[in-house]
Image (cartoon, rainbow, N blue to C red):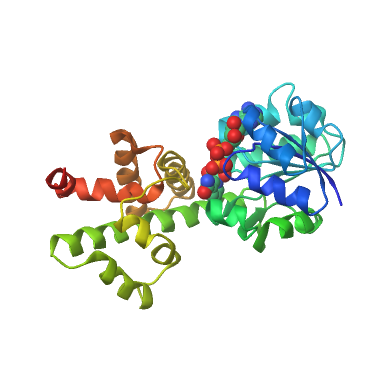
Length: 296
Ligand code: NAD
């Protein structure tokens, strides 16, 4: 069992930290939000006073923060994690951020003798709550093996995908596929409804055939019912589409479908849907055909 410092106890971090505490690890957590700290204490962890307090004594430090500016601030800035951890600590950033920042964190860690992995996750809030996440890790193989017992508490698919930053590239690929499927399921719903065909019945058929997907399986009912409580917020998916497009530019490839989906997600955000679940892409697709106006 390890002493684990956990920074970022939001939608994902709270259940992840709780599972680690439940598995017998000593978890000391910190978040800016006091309510999150109370939840960690209730789950058997310890609420730390600040980042230094959470990580000073840790063997493993996990960060689960919104985006790269928060990771840079919490890890790299003066007074951040790298200023407070002991040598040889394993620092695992599980946030979804741009690969360049993961590589920068790994280099800064190496300069101080700290081992670093980028290990973003897929599976959403349900995956975090059920300890059934997919975890895609970038970094040295030996460090991955050292972190594996911790990953195995959190996820069911745990894979070392390459060097530093590779975990983030795999996550970007995941997010462009997820965004694209949401866009197409939304178009299927709009077409079915506009044609007078019952959308729930139509999607049941799609879910059982070649068009079937986890998104159809888990989300078709809530999408047809227009229930968009997050889940994974449009704001976060907007960030992830930006990461995917920037990674494509960096690698010199064209991803036209990703570009289109990124614009639809941007439109959802611009129309004030940023805090809704990403399945609310349906609202934008409906608006393109004037459907939501007809219903209002
Ligand atoms: P969230 O906004 O619910 O949680 C982030 C937490 O970080 C918040 O509690 C916030 O208070 C805390 N935080 C921010 N700045 C901080 C700081 N300086 N010091 C300490 N705490 C700070 O986000 P989330 O949904 O838990 O997502 C976290 C990461 O995981 C994101 O990168 C997201 O893209 C990724 N992710 C989310 C999901 C999902 O379904 N929600 C799924 C897969 C991956």
